[in-house]
Length: 271
Image (cartoon, rainbow, N blue to C red; front, side, top):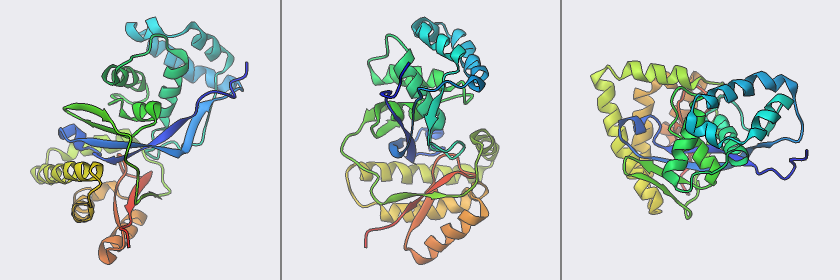
């Protein structure tokens, strides 16, 4: 069976909202087409065990099970394979892209509204993470920037990544480990105060970014504050680069997702 025409699903970048969505803040995510994933025409028997576990997980969810095509189980037994250039453990949504690809090809009666679609994808991605927001796979699936918050979500079509680039820490990270540490820090009042301030700054930057207004002042303060209260989430080599940006004001850095490794974001102001 030839799947050379299978659709490719991009990685994603969480531009704003890392951790802050847990406090009611907004998030803004972008598809990042430099890295992507697609179904392969090749089968690999070594994949069977992993995907069989996914089948078992889907079988426990009546809604998902009822819409899963029988062809998925058949291909799992053959050794279904997905070709991916998305680095795993770098915060670029490798599991989200895989979920989007499986949903696209193997689910019947797909959700037609974004809210239900996000729920479907979140339920699937929870196989990889104990609890998924659904934003990563939704960003890959729609291949559009997404604004998400307590008010719901909005798909945006007129904004771009602009002056943001990725900075590679050279180190894989575990999102579970990072989130566990984050949850332990929430017991500290000073940490919560810092988070509240970051949430205000992040929400303001999101609105300005969407409105194509300058964000430099807010981002500089955000970078300074995040460097201080999220110091445990920044590897030493990244701290050196981060501090260099703060000192020179030639660029500013921030987390790109969970932190503790993976990718970080660098913003270079227009000259």
